[in-house]
Every structure is written in C-alpha cells, then in structure tokens.
Image (tube, rainbow, N blue to C red; front, side, top):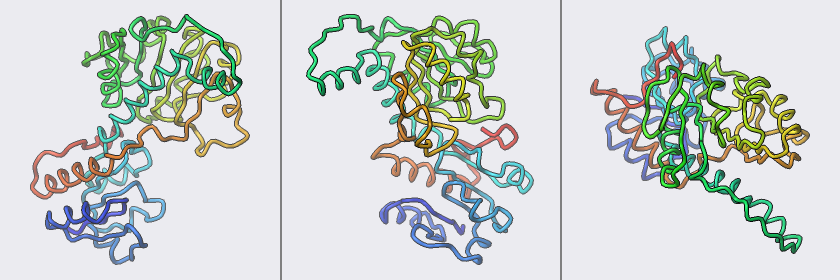
Length: 312
C-alpha cells in the first residue's frame, strides 16, 4: 500500500513502516510531488489538507492522524469518498495526566507564591494549604485524557466526578452525570478540568452563566480545546473572583497574542499548548500507526476509528 508519511519519525521508526511492506512516500524533509499525492492510498500525518487539498488525493483510502483532535479534517468529503480516519487518542494521555496532577498540586501548595517569595527573600508561612484528598474534582469529558488523569489522582483520594454526553458510568469516577446537567453539581467542585474534544456544540460552553455556578476559589484547568472557553467571560470572572485560578494550555488564538490580558493576570497561568510533550510520543504514534496500517490492509479491527458524522 502506497503510504504518505509526513511526521518527525526517526530513521529507525521509518524502517518499521518499510518492514511492514508499505511503499513509503517519505515527505518528512521535502515537499511531495503532485504525482505522489495522487498515488497515495494511506496518509500518516497531521491534517495538512490546507496545503494539499483533499481533492488531489485521488486514491486515498485510509488516514492515520498523529493528533487526537480531528476537527480540521474535511469530514464530509472523507465520508462521501469512504475514506477511513483514525486519530491518536490515548497517545498523549499520560503526559497530559501528569501535567494535570502537577498543576493541581502546584495550585494547592501555592508554588508560584513561594518562587516569588524566594526572589524577594520573604519568609512568610502559610499553613492553610488544602490536601487533594479533601477536594472534589470534576472532569468535563470522560475519555482517555480524563480517565488517565483521574487514575493518577486516585492515589490522593479526592472525590471525582465525570461529565459526558449521557451520564454513563466510567471508571474511576465516583459519580458521572450528563453534560447538560452539569450546573446541578458543579457548585461542589474545588477543581474543574476540561478534557473534552472540539465539537460545535461546545463552542463557548464555558460562558458567563457557566462560570457563575462555580465556587469563588475554583481551580479551573483547560487541556481540551480553546474554543470551549469564552475568553471575555473568563477574564471578567477572574477579575471579580481573585481567589479563583485559571490554568490554561489552549486558547482560541494561538500563539496567544502578546497584548492579550491573560498574560498579565495574577490568577491565570498560561502555558503554550505543551501539555502533551513527552519523550515517548513518537514511539507511541509509531506503534499505533503500524497497528492500524496492518489492520486496514488485513481488514481487522482498527484502533481509534472516527465516526465521521459525529466527528469523534
């Protein structure tokens, strides 16, 4: 199967694709030719269809995305042509989960305040740090990012609530509720973590009304998608609730503009969309892509196949 690959695999990883018997179009360090694009049957990369329009991929039958989000893929065209799409769900879950745990601990132990005190040579003791085990943590979305985070947090003993489309029970959450009913229980949350994928119905889901139901000292974490948060409403909420803390890794516009107010807010921590960073990512993507390419050729079950009508 003629397979287009444009991702930062090393040579050893690329050899594994060759050993699978694939006819590789190696576009890691060069621009592919029109002839190569037209001949490719499989595709392993990010969604590069802005550079290489989908209509030019005349023989394409299978796509392995190297990202978990697939909102930038041309779903209608893929469905119309019967092209199979799989994402990288699960590949990034562990580093993101570690980051979520780290940020919750840093918030509870007020780590930034201590860095500042060290810089200013201030000796000031605060004995009111909350323990994670005393808290209730809610997750918007109960997929692999949320469950991996919750599994790591389980050792600390917090109560954990998950919110998903239908309220189905998911391990290891103590309780789960439909997302449409989140306002009924979110007032008890000490920490809320957004892990949901990008979907049209979730655009600006976190708006002024949503924020008004949260505790005044909420720790709000977004490792999902920037489009979920109404950033103007978030700015207003944080200005009114100085004990609240927002920890954001994703934003509507990236890079975050230098004149954006989020950069200078005392109760908002910015990171530049790096929560998935890990020294194991490429190995995991290699294993996933190899499994799915082999499965596609053999007609056996795929991992992470996307429902093109639902978009996830």
